[in-house]
Amino acid sequence: MELESDTFDHLDLQLLSALEADARASFSRIAAALGVSDQTIARRYRRLCEHGGLRVIVLRDASRLGQDQWMLRIRCAPDSALAIAEALARRPDTFWIGLASGGTEVLCLTRPRTPGDHDELLLGKLPRTPNVVEIRAHQLLHRFYGGADGWIRKFAALTEDQIGALRPDGEPVPAAARLEPEDEPLLAVLERDGRATYPELQRATGRSESWVKRRLAALRASGAVYTDIEYHSETLGYPVVASLWITAAPAALHSVGEALAGHEETAWVSATAGPSNLVVTAMTRSTAGLYAYLSGPLGGLEGVQHVETTPFLRRIKQLTYPVPR
Image (cartoon, one colour):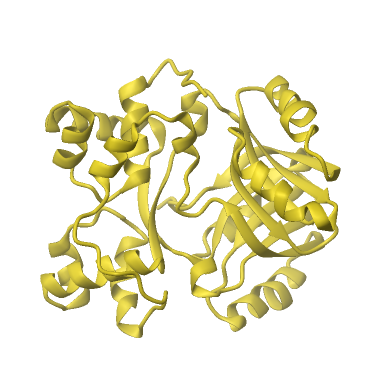
């Protein structure tokens, strides 16, 4: 994979890769790994935020925490899909929302934290929403790629030594992934700003700075939470995003999922319940590139029986949604 951008260069790609490796790494640590100055990294970071849509947040890993995740396909009247998508985007339990099917379908990943949240959305709000024609909810069963594994790493912009230099020091031995009630104030800040400083986290939690450092390190080591970044893929030269609904023969489901996870074009791959048994987010340079992927690497996979492609007409939300004031 290659960067194709009039705005950003290879160093910017390396910085994004470094943030995928550890989005809370200090600028000095990143600078040392990339062989440039702290000031250069700070300046590039600000530019990526301003012109590339860069945001850093800490997310709960629903898969590791044993929480359900659902992909929703909501068919709407054409003049109401955008309003419904924006209303969903304001919810804290939704991600990766886009308009598809010519603007008549809303695609949405939801991670309800409690069964009540799930019931409230699927059995309460959405069915009563005017102009919702159909709701299809697909429970995610197994993640092949995504979560802490980011798409930027597929550019291979960093060496293994550089990645190793960016990994946090002093991580405790991994334990069972679980959250405690006292973690909520800590996560409330980190889910808005994944690079919030330890003094900021101390003030938000009312705990000591040493407690904050230990608890965040423990949560990350257990896999309960992970750092993630969002950005505008079009500024990197990859403006075309599509959801692929794939049916694989049951005996080939795992092998197909593993193969899809290794494709350069896939940013997210999951097994799912429903008429199709795999869902993929693909990112390409053009519609011609999407066709080449469908007819080439994907089409050549043994065990694939059917593919439905739904290109995003517009992306409404990735990981965050800054509501206009």
